[in-house]
Image 1 (tube, rainbow, N blue to C red):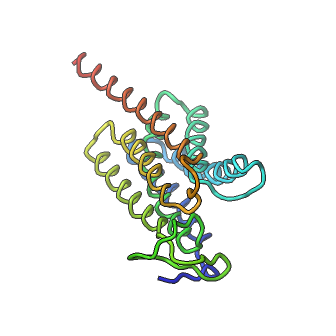
Image 2: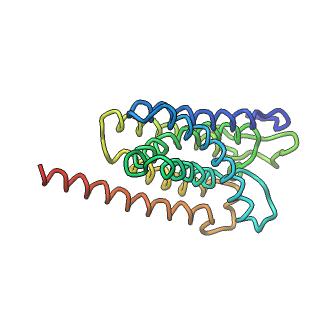
Length: 234
């Protein structure tokens, strides 16, 4: 497969990713009973903070030399929006629900965004000449075939999104922390297939994914403890 990087839809896909996240969170918030005004504020604000967080993390971790969108920075920006809106409104009542809904939508945002990376040739995979190999031409041409890691990530994270929605629809209280952990683990593993990982044992991105996985485990433990405590009272 050959892809001309001079004619990519990277910007369009990033915009669709942000819109998809905002709309998805808005719908889930409305479905759970959160006021439309609050849900609308979070949707709009999260698009801004996600972009800011994505650029900021790349800028800081590159030693203030590079600009680009980091998915983990975008994740931090999304949760920053949840925290800000929760503090303004009423954290105890709706903060937890908004965090859950944001977590469920994050894999969808990542899935859409990676389609943009796939067309632009950024975040490309390791050299690979097997089935589904991709060769980039144009401004960001590759020296040979590479593994379509961005496409693989898009498929994997869309499936994670579907699993999350299924669990949420069945009123599984542990849906969000499980999705958070699963997303962190899968991104950690898929990083080994990225070109930028060549020559590294563990990358900074993988370290951050490991931290996210640990946070997810603590979150899951808290949910299970709360659920068991409620059951005992009953």
